[in-house]
Amino acid sequence: MLRLLSGVAACLLPAGAILAADWDFRPRVELGQSYTNNVGLGEPGREESEWITELRPGLGLTVEAPRATLEADYEMQILRFDDNGNLDEEFNLARALGTIEALPDSGFIDIFGRYDQQNVDTEGRAAFSNFFTTDNRTDFAIFGVSPYHIGSWGSFAESLVRVTAYDVRYRNTDPGVSLVPVDSDNVEFVAAIGSPESAAGISWDLRGSHTETDFETGETFEFDQAKFELGVPVGPRVRLLGVIGQESDALEDISQGGLDESVWFLGFRWEPSDLQSLEIRGGDRFYGSAWEASWVRRGSRGELSFEYEENPTTSTGVLGNDDLFLPGFPTIDLGSLDTRPFLQKRLSGLASYQLARSVITARVYSDRREFLDMMAGEEESAGLSVSYDWNAATRTTIGTLFNYELRDFETGREDKYIDLTIRARRQITNVFAAELRLSRLQRDSDVSAEYDANLISLFLIARFGENELDSRR
Figure: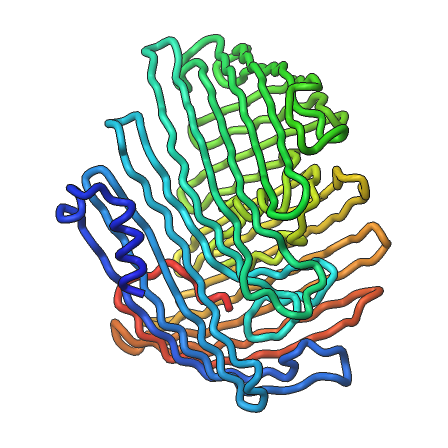
């Protein structure tokens, strides 16, 4: 592990900066024993209990150099099953994000990567934890590079040119998966120039973008867009917005790109203070009526944000959206890992509030997918996650994580998932801690098999410094 993370850092940092860099290694290890009454997520009457031993060695790394930074984390999850040795498994979890300042204050290179597990098919069995066998799981790896240039043209304009190239690779897919995920290469290009963000008076923004996903097997997805935005202030805190442009007609052809259809929006931006902003736009795109909205409100104790957007994309594009991988929350809501392009209409919200001895965090989302290939059709899902962490006493914390998801399929099928985890943690010394976790997973379905499972785990934890990966599995 140390060699792997050191190699990532060495590739990221300029040779002259390696010796001058500040390296912070944070090793950790967890040893646990768990019991579940339904290891295979069988329907009522077909449950099978199991004892599971778990070892989780991990290493976090932070590198800070004069013109480069790196945050990386790696963890191995080793599972040994008492009665079913054929289920023994090792899982890898990793993520890294680094930035090089190639040109002073203007040229940068981001390097990023992630390795994790994910449910493959939304109609198959799904779980929030690697403890359960589902025959519906795969490993996925995302790694890429994103060079970009930020230009400043005095009081006249600011510019951005950015290219993002990343690969998505799938490995160790469960043998029971009928819909085998397909590897892909992805490129995103954005070029923009517009008035400085802090400029008063009329604002303007001209930008173009190109997105391409090349699947190893299957049709390539391409989408282009060019648009011009004009903002006119009508008061000290309100600005009217108008957008015109051209974009690809993904309903006609998903693989050609081009600027075939017109796009326009009208809306407004309201900023009553530096701590709050609201923006709403309505207009017309290649598929008909379209909406965009965002609201952010910050306070001394918390933050609240909502965003609604509509964009054509693929499952690969969703996996490449790092905003969906929030620490402390599961990522069950990513949808099926297939090659079908779709119009995604997504509402997402995040709220956090800090009390004297506790923190409450909530996430809500709604995801509607209208497929753009010849099969057409649509799927919908919506979910709510709430976490509560309470410093109950000196060196003692109690936490709760609740997850709910509703999935609607075009066939009329409806699935509901509920996952609840309660954990109590006692810090024994500055290094060692003990943690007890109680979890319950439940699926209700009007078509497919229903199941529920209970899980109880006791862990001994050794951590040398703060670490990034959460113990969500």
